[in-house]
Amino acid sequence: MLRYGNGGETVIEIVSKGRDTGVRVTFTDCGPEIADIGRAMEDGYTTGRSMGLGLPGAKRLASEFDIQSELGKGTRITILKWANG
Image 1: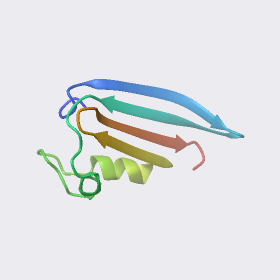
Image 2: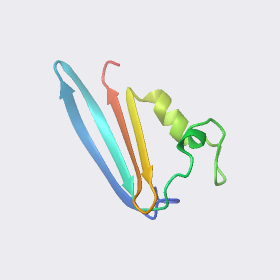
Image 3: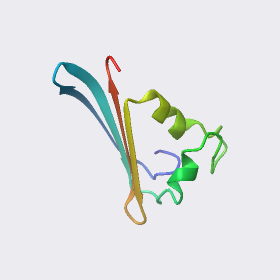
Image 4: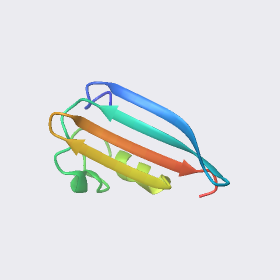
């Protein structure tokens, strides 16, 4: 978000569903869109000088993961992790 998204906003929420509780983190930026989300979700793919494990690694650790990206509007990534899941 800092390197590619021209800044943005991070929202951290405690969520509950019945007896389950978790944490939802939503990252929103106003940078350029991710042109190929499928490719960006592949281990090792990078447009910079990283190992290319950030997005796919976050998805593996999450209970729920959503990514949306649109030209001129930026990218929104929502990660939810249930305490027991």
